[in-house]
Image 1: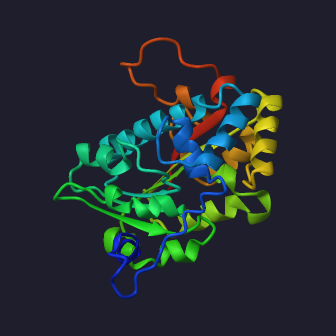
Image 2: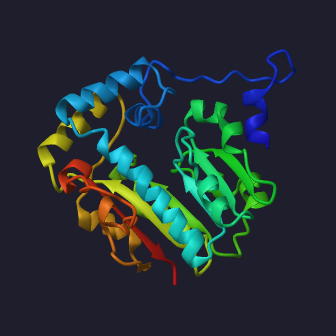
Length: 282
């Protein structure tokens, strides 16, 4: 894969490029990793996360619930709808089980394309590409706002068949896109490129349940140079316009098809503060 070769190449080889990890500024993927208890983060990421937790002590709960929602959504798509190829945009630091591990446990031939723009994710792309012999995975280094780069990637075209249904995963990424970049149009352009029978699985932060806490988190991120937009439910439902929502619709994450094996009470809506849903393209 062309995108990975330079990241993992011998520095003495001709044409080797050095990855700038930009460790002096926080990146959403690395902050998310820290909140999940991961180790692939730097001082700036930890400082932003800790500052966020001071204004909202529940800040570790949304990433955890996002991971659980992602797993349930992928299992639903691979196991109940027959989706065998996925486009995961804003994938973040590799955290097992990754999408391909979940999907290929159900359908070994499943194919997955991961997209992210964090340099540290790029350096770990080989971990993402560890796949079963029957399936395929690829990684694209691109920003969600550059739809042409994503859809025009040779790796995407080699890995996915866009003539067949695709599961588009936009998990906890669109709240980092400001209104002026029109995240609704970005999602619509991606869906436009996918055939009928494709699905969108999406989650998005909201301030509906605890506006003061999330206003504080947004301000912390703003001072750190990270744009965040927590949006009300009607704005999040707009991402599903023209699609057929799967029951139970757009809901707080723990309410979306919880596993029967889950024990104990789920966290409150205010603690989670993330809506999610899955919908089919007619």
